[in-house]
Every structure is written in structure tokens, then in C-alpha cells.
Length: 165
Image 1 (spheres, helix red, strand yellow):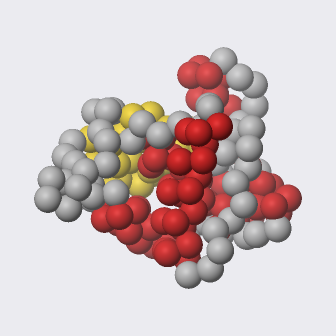
Image 2: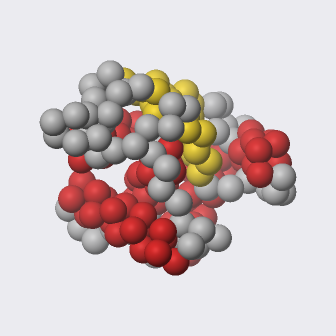
């Protein structure tokens, strides 16, 4: 996969602490791993943005009409679906936006670290870009099971517990 990563400049102490825990090399490796698992071709494009609370709150308000920052937002582009080994998916996957401060808080509440939470949110965002959803119980079972398998195989330990909104 072709991955473009943009990292905003943190402006508060809480953001600086959370941003310091962002492991871009790990996230790059995870995107490649998930892309291979989901049979996304080498030319599939994904943009990953790491943003401040204020930036995420603005996106959350603009696109979801909801207040405050959230953990991850996904913006699919070409409505890709997972490919197959014989016919990998091609095109622009979209944008995944992460908020490390929210991820850090969620990780603490769930009993795991910020890095694991950011991995969870990255896979979650990729799956949303591929059309997966969790609005209905059956959809949630399918999406979260796939998410867990990818994370456990990548991390080499049980997947972090999902935050349910």
C-alpha cells in the first residue's frame, strides 16, 4: 500500500504526552500488514492523519454534527472492498484520522497502552474505509472479529478491548 502520514503539531501538555506515544513505524507496519491480510494491492492509497483535539473536534462537528473530539474518523474514497489473493483491490482507500489524546484516555480506561489503542483505531478506520460498519449487532460481530484477528496476528498478543460508542 501507498501510505501518506501527516502529523499535526501538538499544542497542549496532554497532546504532547499523547503524541510522544505515537509510533509511526509501528503504524506503517500495521497498515502494510492489514493491507496484505485484506488483499489490498500495492498501489492502494491511504492517508493517515494524526491530529490535535481541536482539529478532531472540528472534523467531528463538521462531518458527524457531534461535539468534542473522537478517537478515529474514516473517510472512504473509492468504495473499495477487500480483494482476494487472485484479484487484489485497487484504488484510493481514503483517509483515516487519529486523535492520540483520546486514544491515550481510552487505552488507560481499557487497561492497555496508547500504542495498542492507536493500532486498534487504525485497523478500525481501515475497515470502515472498506465498507465495514458496526451499527447493527451482526455487522459489529463481523467487523470486530476481523479487527481482532488482524490485531492479534500483528501484535502477537490479545487484541485491545474495543471502545463502544
